[in-house]
Length: 247
Image 1: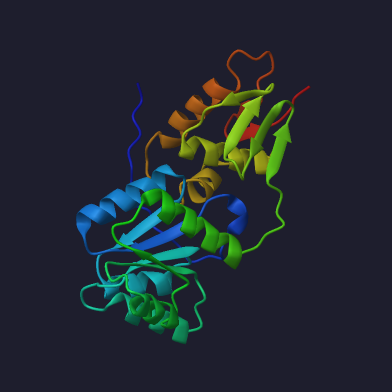
Image 2: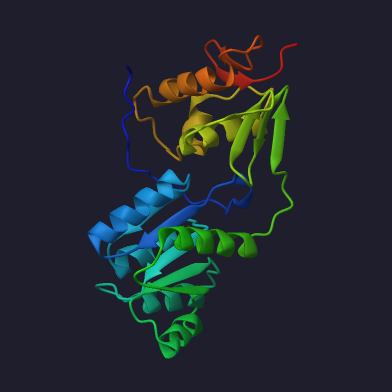
C-alpha cells in the first residue's frame, strides 16, 4: 500500500481565508509535550497549524505569514506572550489571539485582554474548549456570507458541520480528505492541477516529490464513487483532476 510522507509546511504570505472552512493557526508554546498535543489535535481537526517554541520565533512567524488565529502562551522564553501580542497590535495586526496561561485570576485575565488578547483560557484546559474558542474568534473576526453547502449531482458537503453525503448517505472522511473534497467541490467542473492541490489543500509551496496526492485521490474516489453507477471524480490525463457530473 502506498504510504504518505508528511512534510513541514512552508508558508507564503497571503490573505485571511475565512471561506475555506479551515483555519491557519500559529501556536506559541514552549512546553514541547503540550505543544505537540495541541498541534496534533488542531491538525486532526482539519486546521493548518504551525508552532513556535519561543516568543521571538513566534513574533517573526506571525509577522512573516498570515494566520487566522494565534494561540499564545503567556509565559514564553526570549519574549513573553504579552510582549508578542503588544508588538503585533502596535504594527496594526488584528489577528485574533487566544491567550493560554496558568495565571487565572481576574486581574491576570484583564492584563492579558488589555495587552491585546481577544480571549483568555486558563491552564489546564480542555482541547475541545480551546478549539471552540478558536473557531469562535475566527467567525467573529472574519464574518463571511460565503456559501457553506455545495452539491455536484447527488454528492453534497456542508462546511459548517464538516459532513459529506452521497445519495443521502453520510460519507466518513478524514480531515485532509474533507479539505480535498471541499476544494474540488468549490471548483467543480474545472481541471484542478497537482500544483493547485499542493498549494491549496496541503499548503505546500514546493513539490514534495511523493505520491501524497495520488494516495488521497485514490482514498477519496473509493469513498465517494465506489458502489455508485456514476463516477464524479475523474482524472484528466496529463493535466490533473476534475469533479463533475458527466451525465
